[in-house]
Length: 181
Ligand SMILES: [Fe+2]
Image (cartoon, rainbow, N blue to C red; front, side, top):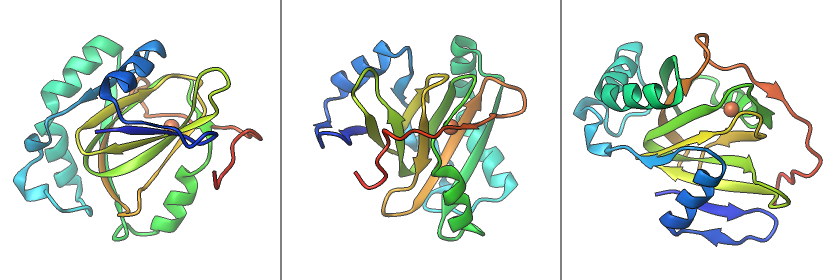
């Protein structure tokens, strides 16, 4: 389950009720998918073919359609990242840039783990949202954020987009972000 770490204060929130309340307050999704639904053949694998990715999407079809009905998502895909991913360092560099989207984006972690670094409300500063398999969250439109891997450097995620063509990222220069904090 997700944990939050406020980069300014190093304060941690592990209470699921508090995390849910924080996301609710932002109009964002924080919920869980059943990790047992991940197809057997894909478990423990982080280099996935197109066919594997379609199998991941098929296994969570009911959840995807329910969220799309509720939140207006119109397209989705599955991604896998690990040290086996070709050009992983370049891909991570691309991911690790603060950006915003004109629409909200939703991510469901179905295997592995990761970190969403998200600008918190008010003067909260940036928050590390540490996510693991089963965590589903959205980042509200216009909220500066980026995604990166945890120390194990492997993740399989389902991404849901409002736009038909996936997301459009607009880079943000934010001097209040401290990379090493
Ligand atoms: Fe994003």
